[in-house]
Image 1 (tube, rainbow, N blue to C red):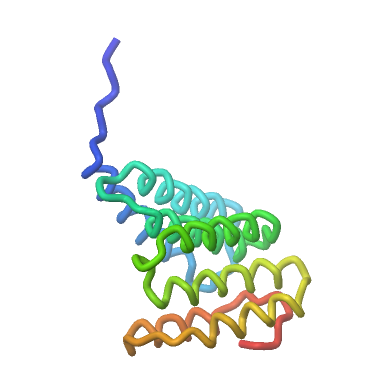
Image 2: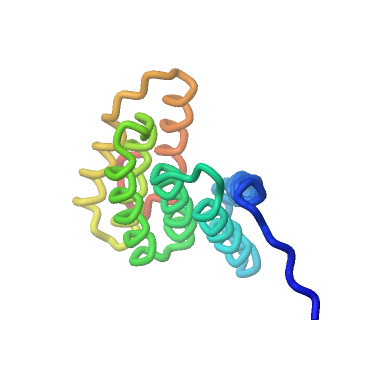
Length: 161
């Protein structure tokens, strides 16, 4: 019987980046068919799997992976699962400390806001949205990306965007 190939940390890193980037192809505001929803989740979870095993992976990589998985669930209307990943994202962000970028903090609030909105908890979602929007982001390009993501649906009835 043939042994499966060994995937080293460098290969996991490449696969994590590929899976991460390909997930964004499906986070473009479209309504997802069942097949696309499955593909979205598979890509997001693949990114998280490979980041956990990648060379040089740190809590910030895990936080971003939790955000990606949570965002995928949020856009699919899976509020409870999205909120779970939002809480995981925030915990890992705290663990990352100074290795987190300003935009990481904004995205942690954005995910929590989106998950809460999905669950119909609009007052709490609005507070989190406001926290996300209030994060000072130094780099103009990063700031523009975060603002565009905050404006992107779905927001499940939240009146902020």
